[in-house]
Image (cartoon, rainbow, N blue to C red; front, top):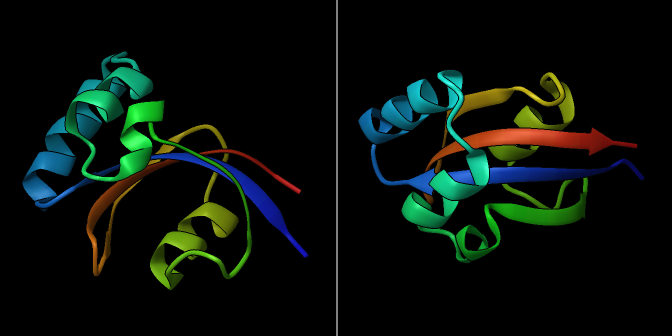
Length: 92
C-alpha cells in the first residue's frame, strides 16, 4: 500500500490560499505560515500530517499528494473542508 508524508495549510477561501502560496513562492517558511493560518489542528505542528496511506484522505487531497510533484507547493486544492496548500515530502 502506498504511503506518503505531507504538510498542508487549510484555509476557508481560495483568495487566502492564493495569497499564502505567493508568500511561499517568495521564500516564506511553510511551517510558520501553517502555524499562523491553518484551520487544521496539524497547523500547530507546522502543517505536518505525518505519514498516511493512499485512500485515508479525501480524494482531491489524496490525488494531489499521490500524483503531484514532490517538495513543491500544490494548490489551492478544494475539499469539503476548505482550500489546501499541500507540500508532499515523500511517497513510497
